[in-house]
Length: 471
Image (tube, rainbow, N blue to C red; front, side, top):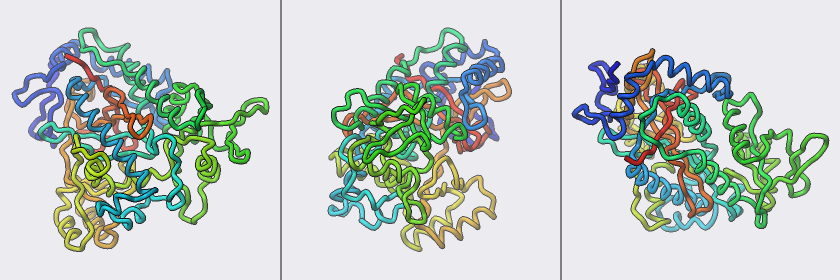
């Protein structure tokens, strides 16, 4: 079977960037050997082998197995190094913004960002104003949503600073693919050792002073959580316990984890992976997780990864200003551009967006996982009419971006290779505001239905291993 990744006439992504072949149809670096090897392979059996390994190892997303396509995405080392350098720069600027927004607000005094824009953000936490702990980066782990435009340029679509998920799925994909793929493919840069080293460095940087070997717990929501597999694997990598709120209690300003047989141990760092990341709920009262963690964290007796208050940087209007953050805080030009965010701050701007809804993607400012996203080109007329009404009534709740024709990649569909849209979720680990590094590649996410642009696992997407290789 020949591995044909070029779009057909009815492929809605036919004008998007082809990850595997250039404009003349020739394989890009690394893909010649990869596609040739796959052409001699039973792709259905390959998928079955992957699925069997994932089931045996309990790799799941909620109640369903996590779906990984066996065709790896290849990124040349020089191209990856440039992207990683730009994303590390972006991570540093975002952490500077969080510290400044809850501190001196130099960026407000300089007129780059207005105070009202900070305080109206749904993720802003007034309780933290002037109180953000100095130890560790507020956003110790950042997941970026990166796409390619039609020219092949990498652009950042979203910044995820609250509880970004996916790096353990990247590890699981690498482990399983190593066992099932045929010989003769490019050799990717190793993944697990870097992931463990960088994860532990971020955790240790958040620990209170003098805790050379901190007691770490991963705080999840139990087996019912859709990301329970990731929480358990993260705890394993850290050599810590996976706990829920019921396993923790306060002892003055200290946090204690209850063990078996009535034993307990003081906790130094909480890697927080709860869905609830707010300090206060809609009723104005402390959330359950904040009632337990906030005071020990502010008192400096525990470190928190990631911090409360990061939703301010997750706000999609903040995303539109990250390039300004880079210039203001770092005195540098941005090395990776953002997908533009269209302003909706005046009635004229709203009407312009309403008139162009077919060309836009409209997102809730504080959403995640693809929830509430409307891709104008794919939406029914009634949905666009409803959206136009919401934009006119509450424009401050949304952002709009031009549709980016996500690049496409050969993917196994019903035993054959077919093009499907992909994005990339790389992960930055911040040992401090300045010490930032990325694991090589991260997780490529793939939309398994033809023409679909939403790649999230919660929206029936899947994953791909991402190979950074040195030709």
